[in-house]
Image (cartoon, rainbow, N blue to C red):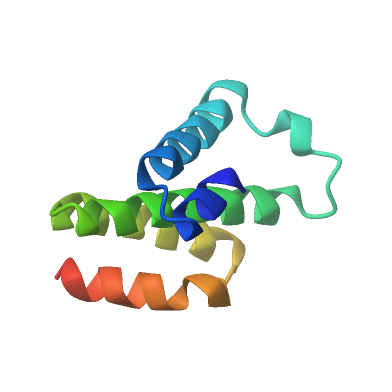
Amino acid sequence: MSALLQRAQGRNADAVTAANEALLIHETNGASRFRNRIDADFEIASVLAVCHTVLAVIAVEQGDPEAGAARLAEADRLRSEVGAPVPRFHLDDVERTRAASR
């Protein structure tokens, strides 16, 4: 996922662009092109949750804890719907962002 890689490399503006593009593609094209996956709903919800998490982390870092909290809530909702855990590589970011957005 481009947004995650951009974030890991410290390219927050590019990460925001990539995450928003991925969310827009899903919103406008839906999930039909991924239906050949073994568990398409799980994979799609997990990817969308990562996008929302990246956006949440960056929002909080940029001083917008309300936007961060809303993005984390959406990521949590998506993961909950399919039983997906927070990926290990995102645990620290999620906990730090959650604490800062309270």
